[in-house]
Length: 80
Image (tube, rainbow, N blue to C red; front, side, top):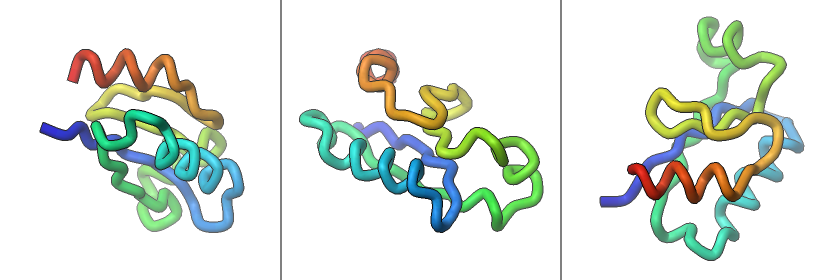
């Protein structure tokens, strides 16, 4: 089964675009998919993540904020 990461982001955010690009180019990118969610479309998510985007999560666990952390992604995938 393929893991599904959630990328909490907003339109026009260069850090968000950078993280998505880095995720897609990881050598093990075939082991997961990425669901993008625009926090500005949901008041609760906007309040929760406004200053933290991009936020990458696996289920309820936040894996990294602002910048990609490859070792945390590998660790999360090993437990998925």
